[in-house]
Amino acid sequence: MREMRTKRQLWVSVAQRLVCESAEHVGCPECGTPALQVRDMEYGWGTGRGIERYLVCSHCQAYNSVNLRRAGPLADTRLMAAE
Ligand SMILES: [Zn+2]
Image (cartoon, rainbow, N blue to C red):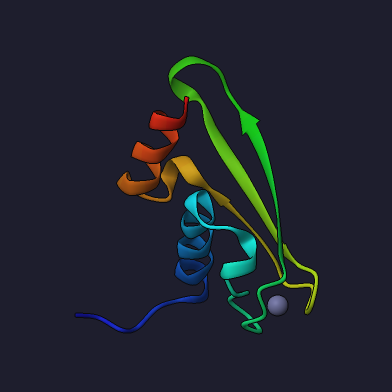
């Protein structure tokens, strides 16, 4: 089991958790405070559709965006199930 995780992977896993968990239960990857604000932008059409999820921490102002379509097979399945 690998414990080494990049910042990018942390943001991706947070974005995935926010698919099914409330933002008040998911801590910011930078400061650990559950103060993330989520904004989803749908893009594309047909088979190219996906969601760009923007995450902003209202506590430390950390910011990142994650393309859920490319975030991994798990997020992919959930997105397809939600449609
Ligand atoms: Zn933060």
